[in-house]
Length: 65
Image (cartoon, one colour):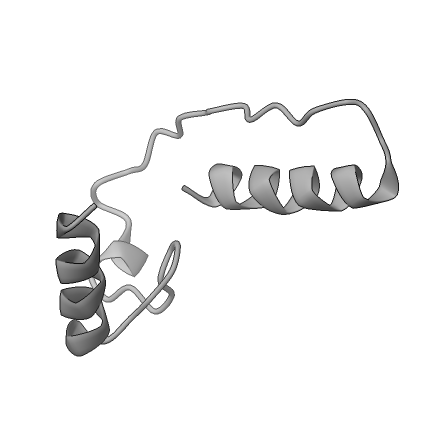
């Protein structure tokens, strides 16, 4: 999801600047140690964060598409 957001932002900027090369997203995977103590209490979100109300609103809006 983060790669897609970055690619969309880059694509918009490059079109506005008249640059002809489109973006490419590279998907990678990482092996995470399940015993890593930092995973017990995560402190940062990955990707967009929204309240439960915002999520419900977005879900109902996209259901009609």
